[in-house]
Image (cartoon, rainbow, N blue to C red; front, side, top):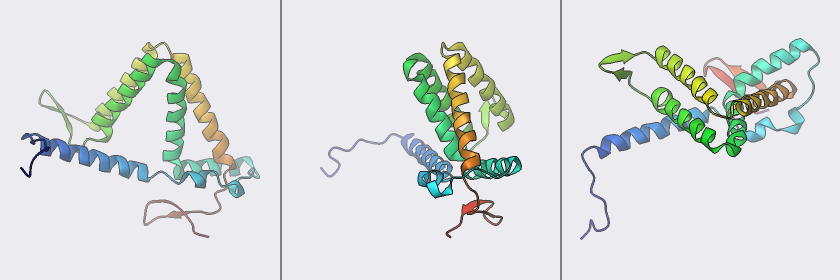
Length: 180
């Protein structure tokens, strides 16, 4: 009776569990590029740039450093804007799931009817499908306004966030926050 209450595993379960485990690892790895939210909102790190070229340089640096955070902010704004359009919200979530499964979480090449589909083709098809599906919903204007608001939030944050304490680490291939 040591197995009482356990669910017997089918032959396909270990492979499925391995896929789920790999998916979780890849999501964690993708989110690990996210910077701490408190870094984005350190008030002593805000000031206006001295020139337009300085603002452009800050936007480039902050966009590289806070890319994942900025994407999360934009997607959250779009998500919140769709709360009053439940069908569009369901479509938005389904499209995001398609992106995750067909593009981001795949380890092996996509094969359809015995033909290998390249990542470029997958990217192009998913991009067109995303635009078409979201345009067919009744929340097109809402999505476009939310996207614009998200971009405005990023464009306001990026030039006013000082980049003096960000350093580029060529060995790690990315920007790192310096400790002092």
